[in-house]
Image (cartoon, rainbow, N blue to C red; front, side, top):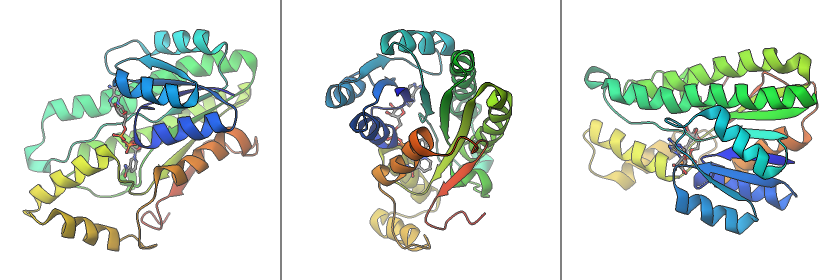
Length: 248
Ligand SMILES: NC(=O)c1ccc[n+]([C@@H]2O[C@H](COP(=O)([O-])OP(=O)(O)OC[C@H]3O[C@@H](n4cnc5c(N)ncnc54)[C@H](O)[C@@H]3O)[C@@H](O)[C@H]2O)c1
């Protein structure tokens, strides 16, 4: 498996890159964090590809990584951004950054990778969505809406690529203690007037039906299942790994 993982320098993307490499994949780690990408690439004998997915051309990123990998069998659209802000105080810049990364970059990376995979009649794409896409989150509206858009793009891409042998699915992870999640929850605490961050976090954890948060490595196992093991007939699927937070 020759695999591109976006946002592979940290959190879930890093776990996917390391676990995929352990299963024999050659991985290109695409990230705005050049040092982080180099470190993960070093750990998994992969390729670090420094790019800003908001400002750099998606087709060129995919072409460059494919050339370095010697081909392309899989893409994990994992890089994401979210900012906690009150609905009545929302800033256009937050919407732009959130949608440019979470949706526009994901759509064009999928299209570029999809073209290469369609030509070879084989390939698997996994998008990282969120339980937020189906929740009412007045302090996280842009993020939640962007993940609803990810679900829409996943369905469209799955249907566009189905006749060409390419499968497109998504994973909705529950709460993982990554840098992005920590920043978000600190913002939520401020918006809710809470200064006792640890108590606030514990209360949020207690609301998860299984009673604990999930490690990125456990979510990565599901991503790898879709990449390596899932039956070919599964496409346009959204797999929910939220410990019961998202009940559909
Ligand atoms: N952590 C959670 O609880 C949680 C829950 C549901 C969904 N998710 C989703 O999981 C995915 C991974 O998030 P994470 O929690 O591992 O976060 P993270 O902060 O650990 O990692 C995000 C990575 O994306 C990279 N990135 C950010 N902007 C970029 C850009 N413009 N160009 C290239 N790379 C960029 C960052 O440098 C970082 O390496 C995201 O799509 C997120 O929305 C996370």
